[in-house]
Image: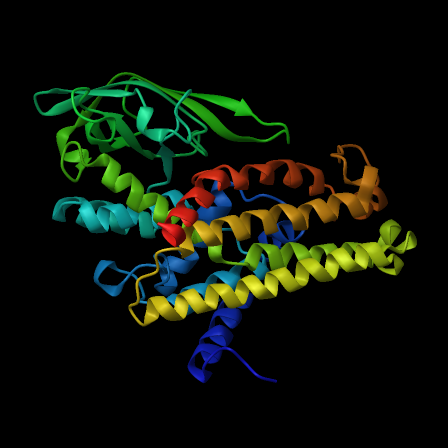
Amino acid sequence: MATLFSPEEEAFRAEVRSFISEKLPGDLRDRMLSGGRPTREDKVVWTRILHERGWGGYSWPKEFGGPGFTPVQRYIFEDEAWQAGAPEVVPFGMKMVAPVIMKFGTAAQKAYFLPRIASLEDYWCQGYSEPGSGSDLASLKTRAVRDGSHYIVNGQKIWTTEAHDADWIFCLVRTSTTARKQDGISFLLVDMKTPGITVRPIITFDGYHEINETWFENVRVPVENLVGQEGQGWTCAKYLLEKERLNFGGMGFCKRELARLKRLAAEGAVAERRPLDNPLFKARLNALEMRIHATDLTNLRFLRAEQRGEALGLPAPYLKVLSSHLQQDVLELQMRMLGPDALPVSLAGGSNETLDAISEYANVAPNYCNYRKTTIYAGSNEIQRNIAAKSLLG
């Protein structure tokens, strides 16, 4: 059969697959493949397994302690990890703040923070959005006022994913109100143990505690925790968002959930309803699979261009739109197939037979609800279409 990958890339895929099969804890794999969500400890365990192998910062160049994977190798690694049931590494550290520190940080910041991110000694979260400052991020109001060797930070961030688990937060703060609003923003690294920080949970519609509102009241942050120059935060933010949007390119999650969809359709009470005999269901299933393959090809085209050193321009917004809708559509078809069986259930007090029967699809509805966010974060898809249109049409 024809392949889109070189023999060396196929050998790398086999190496990754063998490593994950051998090292990924079985209970963690089974929970992830059944739609579960990883805990903080799950992510720490897996990241440290990767770190021991030299892959803790698998997307980083060698000069910063990474393995120096090519863009295609990074894609293969993520594809295999997702499909095998590995938890995602904490993106706020490895894929967001780390590239910003690499590009704009001081030598001391690189030497201190990067090794701790790669080993997940420090667990990071992101402080960008505020009440009233989401898509219009440049309107943020959290203030940082210079006081000798410190900044004094006051304000509020919202939707701070995993702030309740985090050791550090990277924040956009306003250090000036006299310039153009984008020019008065700076990028700060803040220790979450600093006095004056309060994290309040937001329990979302799916019943999970994933996001928070985070308050800063006279929080003292050392000036050496400023990344780049004062007022350069908007440049850092745009660079980070570009990295975040490119993270949508991998199809591993969609492939994993599509495999789960097929498995559910062929097993248990769902199989008795014979969804695979329904031509409309099969048509939607086949259409999803074709879209995933087509997006895979699109990803590979962009990755080959990146490897050749060609300017990318459009891919980040384009791939973000494609991938976010695919994630939602796969989970929506799971919901439509299961109907009322997809509703959240309590596993407490049930017999073993009951637990076995429902555990495979107990997380379908919560995951469907949770992934409605994918078309909003990292810049809403409406914003991404505007960026794409401007890139294409001028």
